[in-house]
Image 1: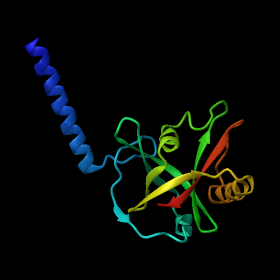
Image 2 (image 1 turned 60 degrees about the vertical axis):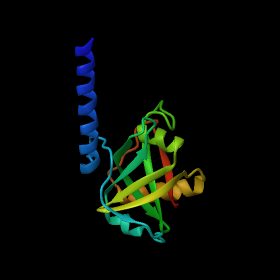
Image 3 (image 1 turned 180 degrees about the vertical axis):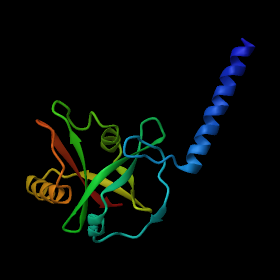
Image 4 (image 1 turned 45 degrees about the vertical axis):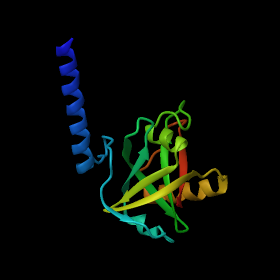
Length: 164
């Protein structure tokens, strides 16, 4: 029994040390692998025009997971009329928010951290449900990403970025 407690203790200490190292280094996501904390320079001023993201292909988003660790992924974005929109593709048969961990996190807690190049923005996301807005943003999306293909029967979930 003492040996088991020692082994469990060593494992817990190793996990705590691993989390400390991950917190210091960030463990940011790649295009294929999710990450934890995002690192960069925090921008606290409001952004009135997000069109500077037109030349940025991918950004990163950090959500607040249900297991008390941040969850970050690399995603695409588009600006329309100065506003920033994030989108998530869903294959046929999947429905929002299920099927994407970061979408489930946003449905539970819409406060996110967005990394664009080396800048961090703490913002809130809202679903963009207006059909006219969706159509216009979809058009801007396919203009920015001309090779983007929607899977047959799939859908795009669109989020509008709000200031906190």
